[in-house]
Length: 72
Image (cartoon, rainbow, N blue to C red; front, side, top):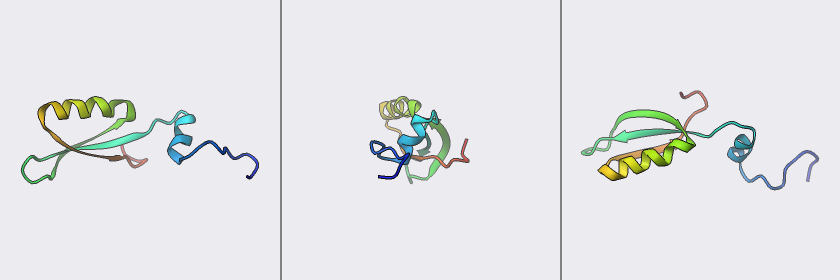
């Protein structure tokens, strides 16, 4: 082990979260017929569950992925 490294941390995302930087996700609402993206939003991790629950309640299809650092 090298000095200054944390043997408990398992991912770069965990490291970011411990430094106060919230993970952000891009959520795309998909067309019901052909699955193409209809609109896109970028949200923090705390909002993802609420959006997924709302979409599930009405049968809406979503595509969720980690957002680029430059996305807003």
